[in-house]
Length: 315
Image (cartoon, rainbow, N blue to C red; front, top):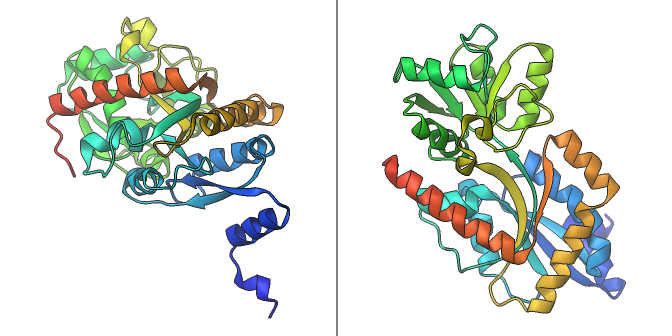
C-alpha cells in the first residue's frame, strides 16, 4: 500500500506545505463536518489562504455547542498559525449556559465576517399576516403556542425571548438540534413556530409551505421580504444576529493578528464569497478587531442578563 494513503488529508496538506517551504496554519472549526458553519469556513478559508502565505489546514473539533473547539483554541500556541472560525453560540451564549473553560479574555477576536437574523415562521393557516399580528396573537393566548429552536438556552431561543420579553409574550420553547428537525416539526404540526436560520425558511416559504413573519434583526432580509423587522416593531436595539468570525489564542502577536484580519477580509471581499453569501442567505458584515471585540462584549453582557432573567440553569 502506498504509504501516503495512511496519512489523513490534513496531514498530507501539512506535508505538502512544509515541502514547499510554507508555514502550515490551522483553522479550527468547532463543529462537525457538513453543516452550514463548516461549509462557510471551508469556503472562506480557500480564499484567505493565498493572503496568509501559509498552507491552511481545516480541523473540525465538535462538541458542547462549539465550546470544545474554542477551548482547544484558547490553549493553542500563540504563534499566529492557529485560529478558529466561530459563531455567536460558543462565544456569547455558551459561557452563560454551560460550564466552559474560557471567558472573554481567553482569545483575541480578529474579524467578524457576516451576520443574519433568526427568523420566525408559521404554517400558512396561522392567524397572522405579519410580525405585529404574530405577537398580538401570541400575547392573547399566554403559554398556548410553542416555538421550536436550536436547543435549550441556545441562540435561537435567546433571540426569540428578547423579542417576546419586549412585548410581554409567553410561549413555550421546544428544543431541537437544528433546522433539519425544527422545520419538519413545524410542517407536521408538532410546534406552532419555527425559529431558525434564513436559508431553510426561505426555501419553504418559496414553496408556499410556510410564511415567515418576523426576523430578529433591525434590517430587512432580502430573502424574506415579508418578515417584519425589529425596527418596524420599534425595538432595533433588541436585535440578535447569527454571525461568524475568526478568533486566535491570547498573546498572539499584533502583526500576526493583522495578517489574519487582512487575509479574511480580502477573502470576504472576493466575488466568489459574495456569491456564497447570497446563496447562503446571509449578509457580509465586516467588523475588524476593535469593533468585533466591542460587539462581542456587548452581546455577551446582554445575553448573560437575558439568561439570568429567564432563570435558565446551566446544563
